[in-house]
Amino acid sequence: MEKVVIIPTYNEKENIEAIVRKVFSLSEAFDILVIDDGSPDGTADIVKRLQGEFSGKLHLVQRAGKQGLGTAYIAGFRWALERDYDYVFEMDADFSHNPEDLLRLYGAVVERGAGVVIGSRYVCGVNVVNWPMKRVIMSYYASLYVRKMTGMPVRDATAGFVCYSRAALEAIDFDRIRMKGYGFQIEMKYTAWRLGWKIVEVPIIFTDRTLGTSKMSSGIFGEAFWGVMKLRFRKIAGRERKS
Image (cartoon, rainbow, N blue to C red; front, side, top):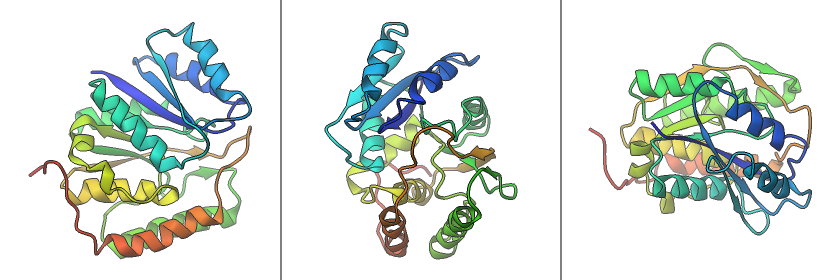
């Protein structure tokens, strides 16, 4: 089964080489696709250097300027589907997601027949390390808000550590995904759920970055808040439906 991990980057020079090497050291074989939005710190140059060492396994898409997390992932999804990957993973570059947990997400998607597997911070209590309490509360209640507004039975709707099966991604019409920031993660999960795909949450421990700078902003949260209010009234159409 061919597997690719999509890692969006903007100014991640402190983390990118270490995260690439860690993923390639795992017992399962994963390819990596880095999607860099014109990082002025030279992140893409580091990836290009590493491509000489990991030829055919490490891939890079460079885009001009910051275009949003959602558009980066959708570009990555299209890239992966064109190249016949069976499973596509989302993961941050900053080690807030433990690369070792890729093995657990992969095991869950294969063994439990899921279309979507979420590395969940909240399915077993609150498993977040080094976040300010204000941010933990905001994140936790954001997912609670999503459950109440949409009825989607997911404890960590805003999670960014996710595995999609090829079939689930093929069913989603990416042109209908409207949110580009924080809300993108919610909209993708909600769309898959409405199309009938099984969603499984695997408990993880989320550890805030120690190197580099967070990309969160109040505008990202605002888009998610208002976008979720509209989701429950939106007609969800896919290229194919799973019964």
